Image (spheres, rainbow, N blue to C red):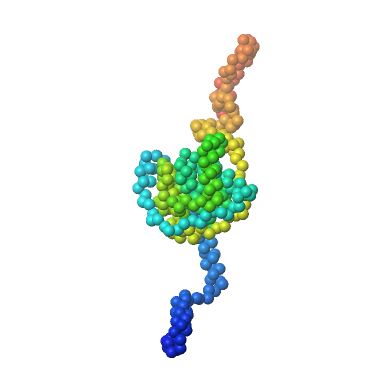
Length: 341
């Protein structure tokens, strides 16, 4: 290479020398390339896909329901949430979401799902708070670990015991929305689907109200607080904008709300509670399971205790007395004690 520069220096013409030297420097500064074996490239892709699948399975439990909550006491939760430090702000910005063409059936369906989520999750929040919820949902659409449609993200797990957005599985949809708050939510949803990006939320994929404390609040990176909601992004490479590379599925599907499902679940829960309230059965009780009357102890004989109209009959009373005398005899007691109920 030294010989090349020497020959260039001896070449006539200043302009030619400068051009040649520039070309030589470009060659030297170019990154070296190495040939990647197809098997190695395939192994890397498989490893990346396996990592994404593992992350997706883990994130299914990152909800604000059930066992994921560490604290449900509002005062204690707010104090501990405030103590979680804010993560460093990144220069990453999410690309505008414009995957769904306005005026299409898919756009109308996605708009309905997104409006619904914004309303039931943040109806009482400010417009900025509503924008934050919309941004989280669209961030998930673009993240490989989540469904690749707006309605798919919103209704993820709605038929399972644990869902991602609680209003889809707790019966909240039975409540009729307030018109003016619904319209505000729709306007925010329209702007988000048209490409509005909430830079304050950034690449956040999670949020929760400040009056609860889920365990994952300490595992993710806290990036923003707006109203009662605290927003988080995934740590490391999974939370960087470049990782949000999934394409929109190409269609939207809005599941139908079935009020009977929640009524059935409520009835089933009441039945479970009623059964649990019944005292456990005495193991020495030998009566049949379908016996709803009194118990009968055959080892001591039996005697009618229910008043009967024929009790006034002299012959009937005589029969009872005769029966009582036969049971009290030693032979009768032996026969009764050896019998099976």
